[in-house]
Length: 331
Image (cartoon, rainbow, N blue to C red):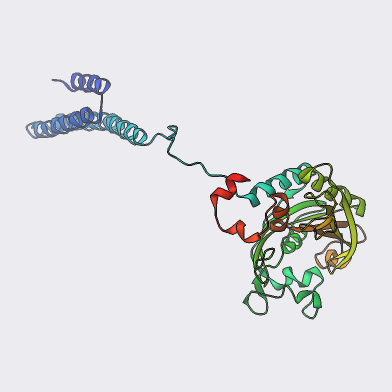
């Protein structure tokens, strides 16, 4: 059989192959046929004719081998895909539920993104200068006492005690104006009780630009709390002190449990403190390379765990870490 006839014969066999076994059988026959051709070439005495026939064999071999290899590969891929069908749903599979902290954060994130904020992340192992010094808290400042903890390498590297460090990093890297939120894990030496753990989640926000005022801060925080807890929520601002903001305000909201009538959740006061906030201190801006005469800004921060306890009506913060799926299904 001439090479052209053999080529047409093998191509027809390739088209008729139904499975991998057919392809492997054809490949075995093809390899035996090539061996026979190489044996035939040894019987040719004429050098030029031998070269010509050798080239024809090599061209034939390369073309057919490629097609048979593709055929075998296609059956192997079909076999792999048939072993696991991701679209098959088995009733025995238990579908999980979102963690309550994630649920609440996503609600807040949606509101803040709609208000023009973007989400940024930063390292949990932080330098002292970002965690304290550039937030107007030098080493001798008394405000560091409750947060001056969990040092990885004393005295300059520690587990961050708030996500305010991400705000400083963002001010240094990003061009003005900026509006960001920085969610994440923070660490402090707190005794474990119904409302405290040494590790918790925090969400902080920052907005810096021209002509930003306290009115902008009030609008953002009132909108956030009303969107998350309902339009009936009342919000009040109380003067307080933070070293990195001036003026500063603690934010209270009306108790969603009793509607300001007084209950155990709000300690009979009708109000619950949920946020800290204020206008960014000019020194914080200047230390980060921003002209405080040209730009102003506001910042706020909240403990997500505490807010989630109120939102989901839970009485113990440690339940967020117990991985009890039955609780998540109830929320």
